[in-house]
Image (cartoon, rainbow over all chains, first blue to last red; front, side):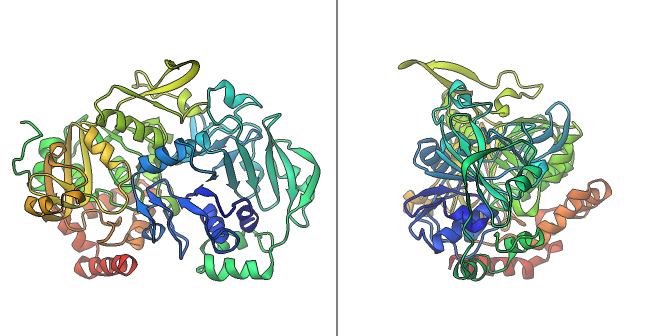
Length: 257
Length: 309
């Protein structure tokens, strides 16, 4: 999953990334096929070089050898809103069939059941970056047909959801990578479609574990297994302390990481 | 007294909070997650039992959570309440779920934009974020107007979102260096602080090191914000503990985890944390002693120097 997500990052990309699995995936890309990738962090670091996975966007190790340690305005304004960032890496408690992400409430603001951290920089990234990668475990409760609260908009409610809400970036790529499958937005419908399956996983298994009923691409590929060399890089150079890989091994990951 | 004066602004933290933080104030919080949170000032605000505060900023972290746990906060207006790998800000989470506190949600970028408008002395500013989201559709009860949509005057038909300027009554920020008339130097990432400090009506600065304005004048291009925007300067070494201050000391993993345990449990656990660490301490230095004193602070200092050395 981590390695598959990294394959969507190319050597010339500028990527805005936060902590967690996105960071592991981004670091892996930098150490393998995308050594010139440029990371920007919403808290201010521009083009840092990671030697270990940071635990926060304000961890001193996320500032390592940056070309600049700046202000939020310089990253979220001048780079993200201005349109100079190629890829945004997001996550959230719920993701629906339109690629909308919820990191605010289960329930409603009037009757909240669970309150999450809120947008942070996620809404800014979802609003202004033309390619969004989402990496998360595949669990049914994470994928309702409609999120309880749209924190970070995908296609909102259909193909022209963003256009009718006056969003400048109105047809972004949204790619969801889980431990079971890869789903991508079909721009003609504004809905997520299964495009790849993890080895050993069937379309039925994906559907069983998804709250909404995903469409299936006419041609569904299999995700390439990581090579032993790639796994070695992941375990020995990226997540040396096994902070994130431990989580994923607990959840039954393995080669499908 | 005009803020744009070169009078000496050095005072004690007790005096600064008495003078500039009032009940019902709109407070601008600097810092983010585990970086440069103004914990010393927040402890003093809690000790002085200030109430009905509105907290504003981008990411509100452990310093916000302490204030919420102490019952000082009526409303938060921010992009997030989060301690990332350490978990949620539990007092914040509970207060919202139990509807004991108002929350006006924005994003980090939109909050920066609002401070930017106020910093520039203008009433509102366009923003590309929030469109199509439920953040825009939601408004806290005491918010009068959250946004406006207008036509781009140079491209009629193109709709643009406008947000109002936000000028806090008092900004509180912990920085690396400040001098006696109020010039400040922020090292490392500056979050939303330059905009927010210049946007605010008053500002309390705590600093690791009090330098002289003569030193400032010999290195003028290092000054982050000049004295016009600052009302109080207090030297509080380790004033962001247990969060980190770039180039000075790292965050204290164990102490943050211990706080999170108490905050997660709430009730008696968090009450005991506040009693032990805030109310029973006369000064912030007393708290630092309890937290491990010189030995612990030097360990954190060395950890930081190894990283930036």
